[in-house]
Amino acid sequence: MADDNFIREVNEEFRKEKLHALWDRYGAAVIALVVLIVVGTAAYVGYRYWDETRANRSGDAYSQALALAGSGKSEEALAAFAQLEKDGYGAYPLLARMRAATVKADSGDVAAAVADFDAVAADGKIASVLRDMARLRAALLLVDHGSFADVSSRVEPLTGDTNPLRHSAREALGLAAWKDGKKADALKLFDQIVADEAAPRGVRERATMMAGLIRGSGASS
Image 1 (cartoon, rainbow, N blue to C red):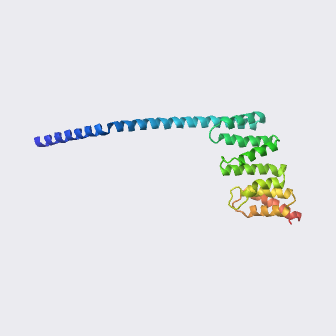
Image 2 (image 1 turned 90 degrees about the vertical axis):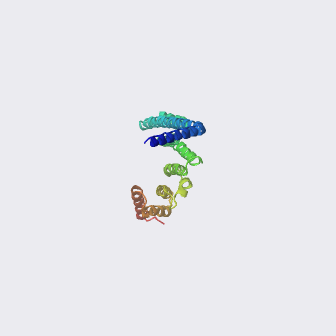
Image 3 (image 1 turned 60 degrees about the vertical axis):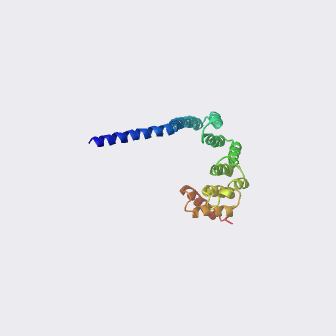
């Protein structure tokens, strides 16, 4: 029994000496690691708070600008969007830029709206899908306020079979062709939409109506 107690005491002393040796060797590194973890965690939490605060502030400003536009206060809305484009955070400056163009179009200044959308489409810093959406928005305005060439120059590249915006691009181009007397070209585009099972229901219904109208007029060639 006494031998067992002695052995345990020896083992305990050995462990203590080993721990002391390890601490003497690595203690400073352990302390530095703990400090780095604490500081890193605090920095991450601080950044998340800063990021969320800025995003929430920009989101609130965007909602307020939308409310102004919705209530017919176009000039105030445009001023709010311009401020958000200048000092907004995250995606909100681009959203403000696009929405401001829509407000201009709704207010009758189509030329300025098209210019704004064209500027977004030409901005290489913006994601390509958003640039394509800007091209489409400009083209849709030009269906009523421009020529077939105006519309075609913006959406022709979007009409390919794999482009996710092809349905709306073909619709815009088809309407522009129909207005310009290019009924055969328009019919081809509307038929492409009707035959595309991936086309949204509303777009297919409008394309079906337009194709029927062109065929009914007997002027599809």
